[in-house]
Length: 324
Ligand SMILES: Nc1nc2c(ncn2[C@@H]2O[C@H](COP(=O)(O)OP(=O)(O)OP(=O)(O)O)[C@@H](O)[C@H]2O)c(=O)[nH]1
Ligand SMILES: [Mg+2]
Image (cartoon, rainbow, N blue to C red; front, side, top):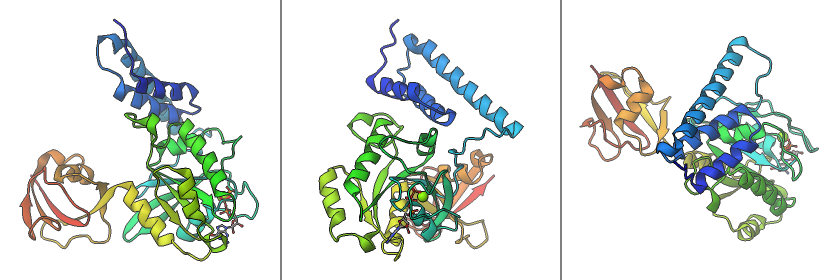
């Protein structure tokens, strides 16, 4: 029986063939398994995909156990409500963004290639921690081997361009790379889930010609959001962080233990559209099946209203879960 693989599948497979690291291979194999037409003709391919996934996972587990020194520096474990990886040309101002918004020890330099490996740091939108990842630069001719792994694993890509330099050229280099790896949405990535949401950050606005970002927007003609900032003066940094939060597409939920005040300091962050049961899975994976009832304070409910497992939650809702 013929396999009749779809064009989407073939696109992901093409990326897989060119993949350089295990991190990347795993993401792509899982996507291939998700979208492969499920019928008799593809059974052997499905089995092969599962086998490859198992092999890579076992390899990673072995490596983690042995504490081998061959750790992948481009694998940044996720923390907070979501991971935002920066991409940009040398000297565009990436490290300066982390320097301004996080406590991470990054290397800001007035010469290009100051950053050699990814460095994570925590920024905050109101009470939500958001992980930013400073990255080595990319150029037309060079991207560090393995660098793509960070982008495949992140939740959101921030394209950083220097508004005082040649932002159109820098943006072109970033887009060419991101498109070639199917890392950002385009006509080519329809139906494949390996692309990440992305937005554009025009930086150094303090020394740029006014209006540069508007010109860039017009010339690029892609449906991104654009944020203008200066890491030096702090202009626009609040909008940058708020944009990260919004594009991560998560909401915060405050958990209230029965009979106690809610914990308003440390919200759970879950995907927008999640319901009570999804929250229970996040809070108590093992207990979720024993969820008996729930009460809610917030949007679309009266205070303390009993809600069903399927009740859709909203940003800033307070939820009290009762388990059996
Ligand atoms: N005036 C001004 N200078 C900035 C701003 N952001 C960064 N710079 C300067 O631009 C230079 C490069 O900044 P970095 O943050 O190191 O740039 P980078 O993108 O991390 O560079 P690579 O690590 O080489 O990719 C430094 O001299 C910074 O001080 C800004 O908003 N305004
Ligand atoms: Mg840097």
